Length: 457
Image (cartoon, rainbow, N blue to C red):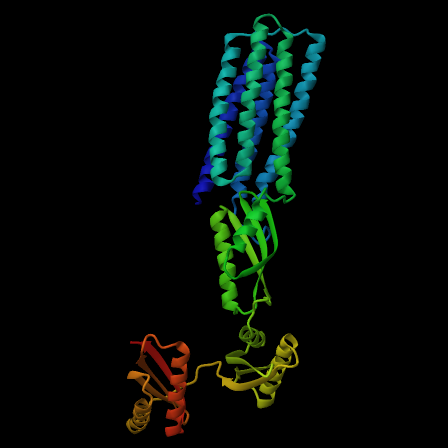
């Protein structure tokens, strides 16, 4: 069981017990003394008891997880409970004022300001103070609107009880009408509490976002690397939780996996900053002004689920030339692959202008693993001879090791590790390994591919 759920139920149940004790004591003393102020307080406590019962059940059922009928959970049960409590507060305030005005007009009620009348009010203040502190603490810890409403009830009782206590003091000195005035003061406190509670509850029910939440979510999302723009932020409270929907824009150069990583970072950072936040992030791919020619080509190829690599852009006599290798599924016919390459060329020209000269080399891409086989000792020896001869010709790499030769159909696939000086540029190393592969294929036509893993010395 969630520890917060247990805390909320326990403090709500203790409020019910306190409400029973206070209501019973105030009604008994109010009837014995005839004090309108104490009877008003008894009605107030009865209202608090009803509110505490509603709070208990709101906490109990509002803590249930989301289901197929309540996709956002049951958190608004707490808000509905608080709204009902608001209505009860105003109704009680009106009734108390009505009875108090009648007493002020007729002034035919005898009031006995006994010691136990004072005692029950002092006892009420002590209990109300204790309960309001406990409820407010747990409400803050669990972000519970229902417990916050209950805490407001008990804290308002303190002020209304103080008004009744003052009225009893005046009655003791023979000023009987002070009791009715104290009752009106109680009604005023009840109405103020109802207004505050009702305003907050209605804000929740109409999905008004908590002050500053949307701006804070926007600020956090904007700080995540890769987020180019914040399109929209929407937030709404639901019980103890806050639901945040945010739409962001990211560069189209990111792969699907890269985009998902940015989305996850946005969600995690907002949740870390805002307790109880449920975050949904939508991402839109856009073209950035800072996008390079290489990124444009790769992005437009990825749009059609193709891979563009070895993109080279150069200028000659004020004319732009772009060449690249395009990997297309090997199951395609040459016409299908060529049509795709032509479509990508048209999209590149649409962005860069018709004057650009494009040249693409289409390579087959195998989307599924194929079965390979071991080579014979004679075949292995033949491949190693070609490798050793090439190693003698290419001086920039050394210490060839971890050689692996396998066969797919009638073609050989060779891979090995080697060493190169640590300060050689990556471009230089790539040129060396490309030359190494070319020379090996020249010596042995059956070699399909050579994969070279270079490690720094």
